[in-house]
Length: 497
Image 1 (cartoon, rainbow, N blue to C red):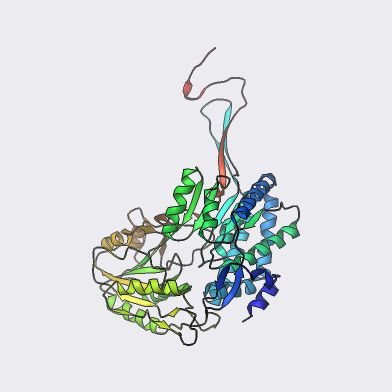
Image 2: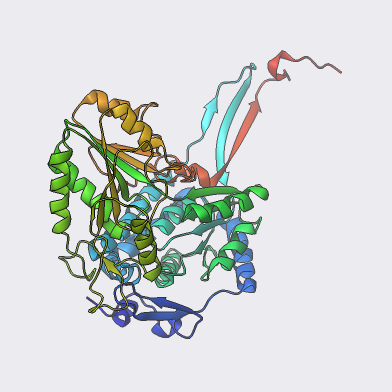
């Protein structure tokens, strides 16, 4: 494992640049101070938005394939620095090193996707009801894109948005989590290196705003930023959405998840246990797609749950850079307190949930993942706790399990384990899962770049990454072309002078 000094050196960052500021950044691993970062003033936010607007007006006229070249070079920079950036992610947000590498790989993958997209920003040709006419639909750049990201995926979410926004012809203004600003500084450095290598890239195409809530609030309220893509809690989304809507902007909201897996009698139980385990404890339960609830058919309950408990006992909690570690620390003491409050609020049999390694890492908050066996109830846990807590519910009827699965405010990710095609198709149908992501025989975590990522209800309705999510970063124009010598009106209306 490299030291922070070595990591910064490999990324070409002067260590002095992350010292002397007001924002103190701690490593979740041991609570050590990583840096003291200067935060942006209101005046600096204003300057950044002004520069981003100027960059947009220049960049929007660059042909899309040339815009894609910038993202191609950025992707190569990420390949070159994958291991170093992965270590920095682990150091600053606490996820295990393999997950840190995986997050950087997501960045590389979205860059590859966006490069191909730069030659596929397709519109439509539409049949006209009028003779001698043709209709067309085209997509155009929309303006500076504001990106607000969370600590748990400190770099991938930025890249999901930025890679698409840039090839679509926009500039980007990024406000990272105040808990993980150093990874953001590293990403901005790599973007600037890519821009210099490509050449003729306008200054201010990518801006970085470091600070706490006030900085994000100023970005969200500015009408010169037509799109705000915000990832975080539902509470944050409730603040962002109305402000953007009031100024007639557009929001891409990626908010909370209360994700569930249903395990049916025909399921491959070994496969289900592995998927449940990673979904519930990966990133110490601090993913928006983490598995929070588990519905197990009563006929297999006494087979699956003991196997799951045995697997939980084998989980190794510890330093996230240790290759044998499966679960690293929670982000901070506040996350630990919220986990304890959630566990103390429910009286039910459970294993796990205790703090460990406090003597070795007094400044780190390591916990054993908790598994809670809930009684049969008409309603399941309604709130998301960003921690490794899995609530298990027995069920008798699949339709009732689906009803309870959907009976929560959130609607991000979901999964069913079954070898019965009827059960699988029911779960994927309109009568099944109401989530933006619905899987069969895989867990709730680990979405691929090719599909649009996002959820419904209080998850916000936003979509990022693959499929046609790129349309969220563009504006649509419908055009009618008259190549005849007549001027007929639509709907057969006659209007003669």
